[in-house]
Image (cartoon, rainbow, N blue to C red; front, side):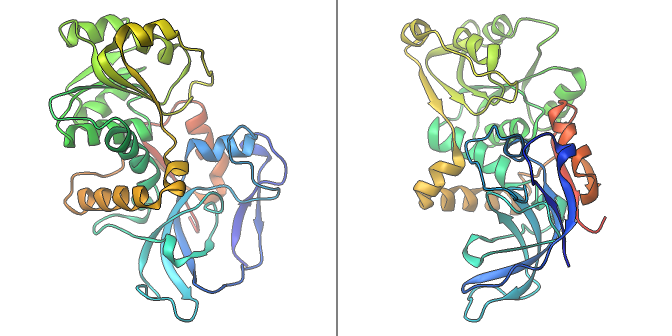
Length: 327
């Protein structure tokens, strides 16, 4: 029987269990995928803590993205073959040795990608693409400030921002994290502990402020970003990894004539599948051309799921963490 990480009660990762589960039945239009890697994402952590918008019934298997090979197909499924290497996206179920999903949800693993890279590619990539392209319409020559720039989503935004022709300013908490952002194309960097990021942004933009601000951190970083934004700029509210959801000063939004844009890529694409198709197609093209690749900082056996989740929770991950079934 396949092994899986199971959430039977909400709480910290250490409360999860590692269990043998019976194989899921294969329904019409579905595929069984033997998983070789599972990406660790903040939504996984928030879901097991009971703090995410999506609240699945207990028990459930966490994991919103993974990668592996097709082991079985339901009769009549077209466009796929047993043995194809694929990326999977789902709301739950990724921390396991196998998963059953509608074949229409599968995405082909980009050429040259490892399974671990594939399992850490789409969630961060689609979030960055939806934010910068589909929400902010980032233009060549604009300045882009990326907060939390060494996280998985932050590094994806740095890399994609450069591909879109922006001048990218990366902000993070340590020199090591900023070095990773530099390596992914950041033009300038700001270390939170060394200088006030608002003053640094003004200095780096000749007083104008950043045209687009990408913020997955929240808290006081989001509040102060309204002081760092340019006239007519776009502030992207991507998440609250810092743990605090703040109130914003509406007068600053008025004075800067700026837009505050919520970024919920998964829900947007469930409501409009064409958005998802466009994002996935663009990201696959970038990947196939060697322009986008996730930065992996750790690959751990699936049984070490709590350690992998703690790397994100304790802000020790630079880039992405993968779990490896069978490892």
